[in-house]
Image (cartoon, rainbow over all chains, first blue to last red):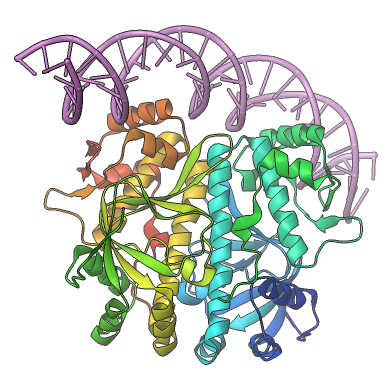
Length: 252
Length: 252
DNA sequence: CGGTTAATTGACCCACTTCAAGCGCGGTGG
DNA sequence: CCACCGCGCTTGAAGTGGGTCAATTAACCG
């Protein structure tokens, strides 16, 4: 399942991570170098297998370099709920640094290349660079803020609006990560089953919701890439307000 | 709205906070004293007013000493979604330390007594006590883990099970905080409107869901206190698994 | 060209919503 | 002291969003 690869500090995921931090605070080149140096190795994870598994005590955190991943939890009576979608530049399990034990799994939606950061190194890094430590903390809290929005969307929005909100969120995050291409499209390699698990609806209803949102328009999605043609329309449909992504430079 | 009070380090909320930390890792007396010394003042917040408000940049974090509070977000079309319930011993807005700007509000459900911790002091504290800093980080991530469970419950459970899950969660948290009394009851001073906002259902349905769960049995709730008579039954109903609360002593 | 996985659609059912009304209780003013 | 009011709780009836079961089509793969 896991192949070890050479470390390449010019990889897409590293650039996205740094871009994400610099969208929120000043990050010196020295801090950036110190952070990237904490990576011990690259690995490949095959589509369908787990980056980290529920119940285990982990000793490393994982930065997604290439590919798509998701956090998910199975509930005993059969269903699966996806609680987060991850794109390159996301630290998919940074919260395991203070938490240690995984209370859910992270799975690879596509073949993934990931960068591994040992907790021991990150811990030392945080003690030597308090500001960098606060930035890592911040990343985990932005993650939490996104989850809060998922609660709000699931609780108070219809499925069509909820789907529009998800698209708006992914587009906003992809833009920060520098993943938007010239045709205004972002990677979104999901099946409708996975989409249904993320929205918390049945597969049948996910399909119908998608059909309904396509009727609203403003985007195209082929299961691989999401292309935005009318962002304002999607924002209006979703009542999307990006403050929760904390996209402003503040001294943290 | 806000009255300044004398600081009392023997208050219920402080004891609950320390108990919560010691349930998850070793906390030396020196660390405990350093943490409590970071509190600059006590305040009163009246029922119905906000501890902190969405959109503002805050410079202090707030520990709930007495009373009940909730995080909530309004969605433009009228509804309100509660995303967390807070009891004494909870740091209701600790995540504002790295985040600065509030992306939602925290409201007082009852009259509350709170302890104020200036960010400047917490920041210095974290730099001088890296272990304490990781413990605070951990607290914010346990908060996030609870939110993840809310997503799972809302997405994959029916309303009756979701309510049972909420009761299980609150009871488990109250036990850690030392808030369970001799009759096995915990404070839960909510109206059914607030319960509905937390579950993400209509008021009418919250009422019917409560009726249905009462038929299952195992608890009593009068809108002020929740008394548990058959925890196993509630756990079974909710398919409750407390791992996500991270109630094990591990070196963080 | 068969086998498998993903997308799509129809039919029917149930969970939950909305609208509406009634009840119980504490608080207030006459 | 009582009449009234407002809030929270409760219930009924009818509508709808989303679930389940089931079948068909489309795309991919060996």
